[in-house]
Image 1: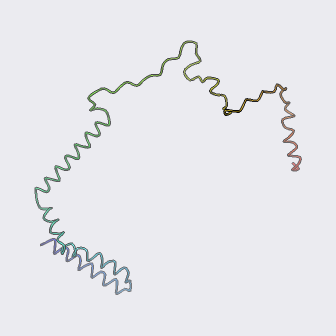
Image 2 (image 1 turned 135 degrees about the horizontal axis):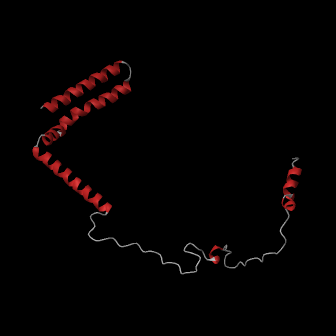
Image 3 (image 1 turned 180 degrees about the vertical axis):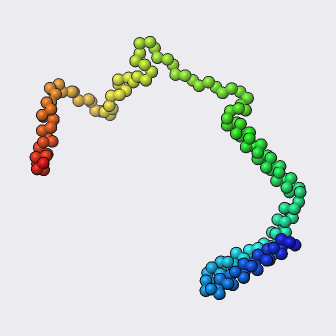
Length: 153
């Protein structure tokens, strides 16, 4: 009875605000306010308010919510313990260590020379390396000098 009266008063106040807004020539805002103001009365007429108030004031409903909360807390606690590995019944398997390198080898991080060679594909053969003398520093910059002279620099 009290909830129905409160909902009716809220709706009446909202409709009053909508009327004042419409008087100020803001019809779109007034229609929106009126729509919100009619919701509490609609909830009373459909019986939702009676159902909610009956549920809120029952001690058995609150006991049910308390049990739901307790089960949720227990579930989350067990998941947290399981993630940390504190509740495992058996010990986890030890990590497998890589085999040690034989004595005299280059080390564990060494790569075979063939592995670092560039791949040329199936049918391609590597070109023979020419054994020419290295270029002098003046020869290295001759093409750059030609480009600079071409641009007038």
